[in-house]
Image (cartoon, rainbow, N blue to C red; front, side, top):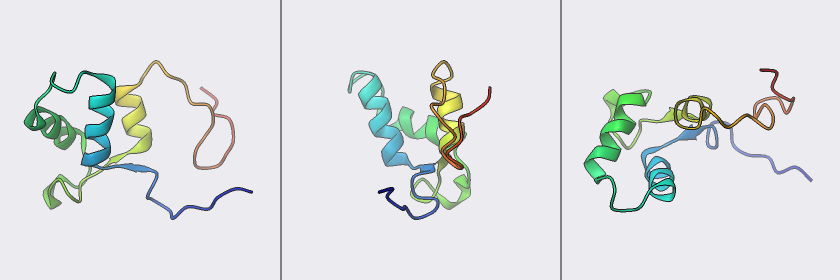
Length: 83
């Protein structure tokens, strides 16, 4: 059975998710909270609403921070990505 999700929740990376990704890929003391927040806000959509409501679309996040990793499939339609 395929679980249904609310649209938009898994396709957006918020600041908390971004912090977790940075800490998981680097040592926890390598970057300060200010540095992580600054990079997030430079790439985020709707930064004028502040860091709590700003987000990075999942596709942009993957393309910016994991460019060498290919898509296993298209997360919107379920079809294999043709790149």
